[in-house]
Image (cartoon, rainbow, N blue to C red; front, side, top):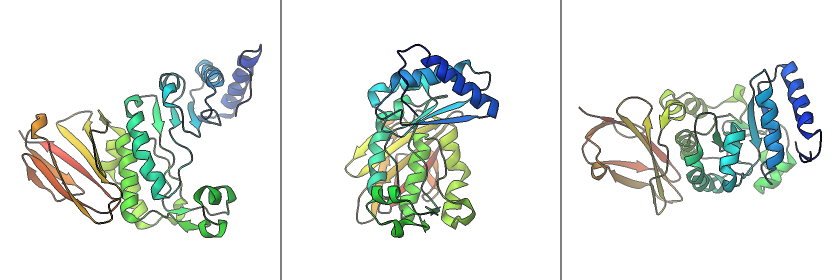
Length: 284
């Protein structure tokens, strides 16, 4: 969806007419492909302006990425969500890549403008043969057709944890009628979804070797949530993270680690490529 020379007369009117037609059809969500890479600033502005003038509210999504980070201020002002990476598939090397992209984009997430880490490749995938996806994954079409996600169980947990704590839009990429139990549990975990929907100050605060930690605070209440993800470790790893030096009080712990109380640090075993999501509630 690009190719209009916005410096010529009639360019804005073209996009105005297109959005007016969408409004007549009752469209709520516009996904504009091929505008982010390369970054078509003039056309993004024109499409955004056409939506702004429309009497029908519409969400504007830009895809695919990677959207240039140097265009962050422009894209925040003109789109509701935008892809931060090329197409994302169920391969660990691609999930590992997202950590750095999420770190770069986290300062630019906020109400009305969300960096998009792409759909969740969970559950039953690729019901029909897709040569393009096979080429992107470096596999044959037969190998990837009508199969369940290639992510391991711990990798699926890391995927959902990172997307939630980064506050990426959450869009399921699998075939829902054939969901497996783990996928269903991940998609319906109310506390994890609450991190995605109602938290602030979301950022990476630690990248130590193969470990990454992100804290989040609820929009209300004395609760801190943090995700610690182990990356590329062949064995399981025990992580210990302290907060007393940062002025945190004693807290109660719940989440994907043993429940209990702590005053200075949390220790948790993390599986290879896995993550823990902790809920830390201040004790008064």
